[in-house]
Amino acid sequence: MGELAWRHGSIDEVVALSLQIPEFDNPYGADEYHRRLQEGRYLIQIAEVDGEAAGFYASYANSPQELYLWMSGVVPQFRGLKLASMLLEGLQHWAKQQGFERITVKSRNRYPAKLRLLLGNGFHIVELMKKGDSSLDYRIRFAKHIGA
Image (cartoon, rainbow, N blue to C red; front, side):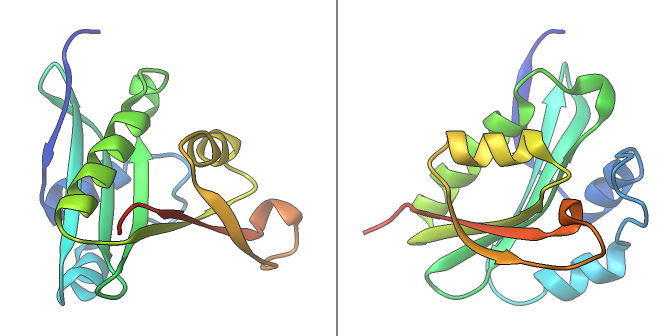
């Protein structure tokens, strides 16, 4: 694999990429992305490998101080290339430039690679939400202070 980069993207690109992520049983359509991203500041990032879309992050402002990383995924054939790390680094840089003080994100026990990524990049567990029939479905909320 060659050149890795990220760029700003569109809702249509994220929806198309979501269909390639096997962990998304029922991926959100464009309407839900428009609903979530319609007000305030948001960032859609597209990770590329040699110019081919390979993953994404979709984040929006929860408040003037907080950016929420809502959806993310990397297409299986491109995993192991540190694309999620690259996107997270870009997200943190953009969030600081925009004046956010913290980034929050939720994940689940069933995604250990994402949990390791967040913990390894200075995010802290701030809440556990017991949802579903299995502890694998528990939601874990993370936060990282990035600003003044």
